[in-house]
Amino acid sequence: MGMIGRTKVLRALRTTGVVAATGLLAAACSSGGSSSSTTTTSGGGSSPSGSINNSLALTYTGGKAGAANSSLAPVKVGYVNQQYGSPSYPENTDGANLAVKYINAQLGGVQGHPIQLVPCYVATEEDGQKCGTQFLNDPSINLVLTGTLVIGNDSLYKVLSGQKPIIIGNGLTVSDFTQAAAQSYQPGAPGVISGMAKWLVDGGLGSVKTVAVVATNDAGATASAKLLFAPPLEAAGIKVTEVFISPTAQGADVASAIKAAGGGTADVFVPITPVQGCIAVADAIKSLGINPKVVTTGLCFGTPLIKHLGGTFPNGWYFGGYGVSYFLPPMASVPASEQLALYEQVVKQYNPNMEYTGFAGPTFGNMMTITQLYNKLGTGATIAQLTDATKNFAGPQFGIPGTPVACGKITAAFPTLCVGQMGIEQFLNGKWIPIADAYNNKLINAFG
Image 1 (tube, rainbow, N blue to C red):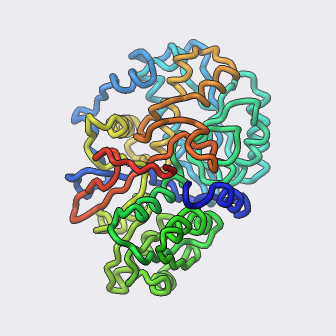
Image 2: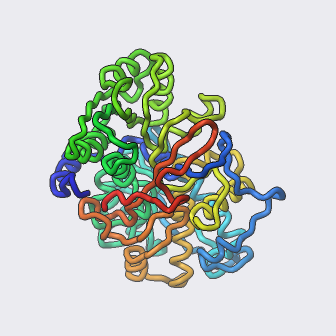
Image 3: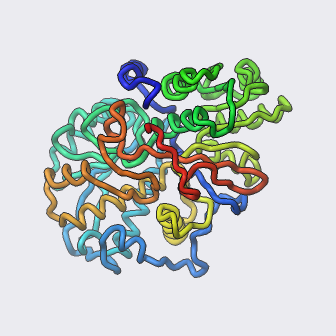
């Protein structure tokens, strides 16, 4: 965290209550880097026949080729997600169910036993307590995985803290990153937003004197902009002008915000918005007739924006994410990219119509990691064994290139984080270009 000051930031984040805007990480892990991609939304990992080479997955999970034995007792995993309403994140469940189907059909389950999700969905804070109590009182469940929660997670953690281990699927709130009840195997919003700031301070775009920020005015985006992004820039003598808009702002309102922030004249323009906001920003830039140097999160190449632009991405924009891509052919030197390509093959074989970007991929990866842990410990793994294994998991995390994986040791401000590296890529003239990511071995240590 360096220049921000860990204690000050942590106190402020707890006050604001949220780290990331609703959906801010929805595509963060899908950022890409290569010099030769097409503009389509599909990656290059699928085989022509549709069959899957399972050797990589078997090596990662420690499984055995073939189907699990459905007559054996299942290995149950508690699963909590914000599934319905607004906001909701059903793609998490698609990713988790896809992983279970694949693991049971082709990777032998867990030592021959099928793995089974036991779902519990939240829509209110009280639902978090309900789900926590349900899993606490179920002796067949020794491990809990979350999808994405912006409500109910604090209650869930309080019930299960010290009782059963939790793996955070895609953390967005302060509770996800500042308590000791769980582990997060991705850098999350703290890593991505802080990493973008660090890259600019370190000269990633040369000499930068002014930065314009337009962010949504929910507590999460406000915290990300004011507490994670602006402080290191200002400490380096860079002037930051922030304007906040409604998450539903469109048209003239967004254009006015860009003008007020100085988006057309600043050295760098940074939108911090959910994907619909990214669409509005792209349209506003066009209507204003300006050509700013844009640095944003990977959410801004989510599927809705790609469809809005007719199958391409905003030209010239820089994207901060996890340093590998759903969209590009894998590289043998980047194992995480090969793992994402494998994931795409599984999608195309089992559920080709699912929303495979966003949170689905990381949740798939978490299920692969859970299977690895159980295969090492055995189907009778105890709560104590699983607690120790989740806290001491040394990676690599499936589909995540950042190293080291060191839970509780990345940054004192966010003790649940187990990975602190991220990547920057640019989409330019129909091609993805690696700027600082896994493809050119220049991942950014956000907290270094």
